[in-house]
Image: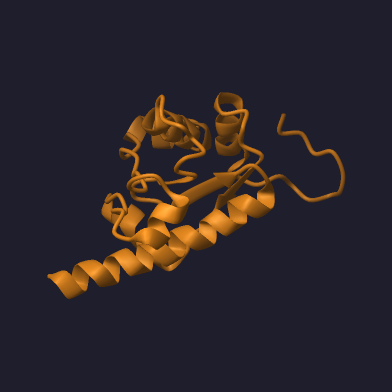
Amino acid sequence: HGQVVEGKLNPSSDTATHLELYRHFPEIGGIVHTHSPQATAWAQAGRAIPALGTTHADYFYGQIACTRALSDEEIAHNYELNTGKVIVETIGDSNVMASPGILVKEHAPFTWGKSPAQAVHNAVVVEVVAGMALQTLQINA
């Protein structure tokens, strides 16, 4: 529930975001938030990562969605909670485990899995397919 259970370190500043996802999607067992360069570039551009190949399709059903931008009000008040809410809003009724990651517009990616290890793996996959998609689109331009 967001409480420290052991140790002296403070919880992540993104705890409210994580808790919002855990509340709405009980099948999630781990969440990762990165600022990996390729995926973050897509998020900052406000663009979903298109499904352009089998590497992408092996891990994500369809595009890797990008949320809407948070409003000034959402940013100013409860930013971390509102980040979770905009992720939940974007996922909607979709199968959260069929595409285990999302880009938060003007921010960066979040990924998840049945375990923390799977969430980390999915973060690596998002970064790889983000780079591959960019290169593919550049070649085809």
